[in-house]
Image (cartoon, rainbow, N blue to C red; front, side, top):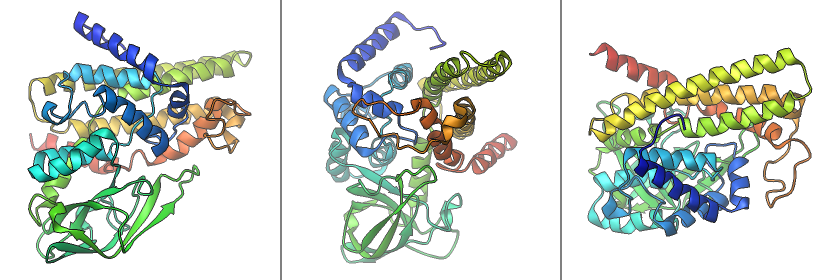
Amino acid sequence: MAWALTAAETAFRDEVRDFLARELTPELRIAGRRCSGIFSDYEYGNRWHRILAKRGWSVPHWPVEHGGTGWTPMQHYIFSAELAAADAPARAPMGPGMVAPVIIAFGTEAQKRAWLPGIRSGEDYWCQGYSEPQSGSDLASLQCKAVRDGDHYVINGTKIWTTHAQYANRMFCLVRTASGGKPQQGISFLCFDIPAPGITIRPIISISGDHELNQVFFDDVRVPAEGLIGEENQGWTIAKYLLQHERGGAWAPMLRARLRRLQQAADAAFAAGDTHEADDMALRLAEAECAIDALEATELQSLRAQARGEPHGIRPSMGKVLGSELRQRLTELGVEIAAHYAAADLPLDDGLQGGELPVPEDAVFSMSAYLNDRAASIYAGSNEVQRNIVAAHLLAN
């Protein structure tokens, strides 16, 4: 960490480190270190989530009355930094970090009682139905329809890029319940159980060989109307609220952990090599470190604003652009450091029980991370759209 801590914050950091030393098993650390996607596979991510739940730390950002910790913004940042430094598996945010804030803000008391405990404990695992084949960054143009039929909605259409739908038992979904007027009008926010009759989940294998993504098809799928969040045709407001949570959060802790690995890999790769190449790579890594320092300063400034109760404004969009593009830059450096070893096509879960890979682990990781993170500037709202949001805000002031 590049910032000074108070005595209380130092004590909290030490408490977190002690917990990680006791509870984060070697197998989970390996799984976290070898995770080249956005977050870990269900087996390891959810196992780690349940361990955190026993400590009361699975949903620290939630209000205390729903199981949150009541931590200060700085404590949240310290917690993220320590987890990243310890190679803890990155957990899927769809339940704890995306739909849960929506349920807390817009849900009925019955919906909160029905869904929040399972998210907190890890018993329930959610996926997100937002994007469609022709509605990605232009999300308001979505066409997946839901027609009210008594106490149910009947859904027809498709959703795409549905991360971890193959593991999920619940889904939150944007559907069109009315047409006419502006495209943002007539969208509703539904939550329901999956699988269900009429739902087909087809895998999408990424260029890295990973199965994280899916396309989900709905063919006369009946879901209870009690799963409607908020009012019918008012889902766009809820969707925007959720996207702020998806784009928010801290990037610097994860990036700093990635940079530390790159520096170690570079030291090993150039130990007996060309001094000029080693010096050039050291300079580029130093430039990346400066960029991470700048991003971290921006995030800490946002924390102070959050502590003062200021609205998020354009900070989530700024952080998304800076963090995702820096993440991509680090993967490019990783491939260069790995050189010919990056061409090795090996599944990173080989030897997850503690065995060794036949080539350097970071080399295999580098290409997988590079291929996975080509999408970083697209998911959670493409960076082009985020730049437009930032520009519109600045030009209006």
